[in-house]
Image (cartoon, rainbow, N blue to C red; front, top):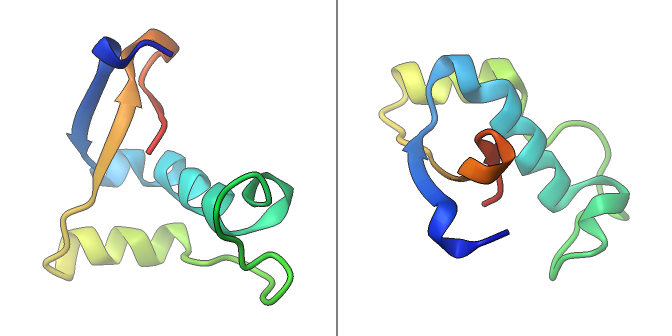
Length: 78
């Protein structure tokens, strides 16, 4: 992944499902064990549902920023 292809975007309701997968991979499941922190051994289930994230960004006064890799068709990376 080349750094010059990264772009910051505001998460919109139509992109919440992809963002939720990124959020989940950071804190839960086997993929999370590769990072610096994990809840995988402490908690189960979703950290935040798609509906919950959508409510936050549409009615909760929350703005979520995601970094995407343009070389990977806009795949969220951070």
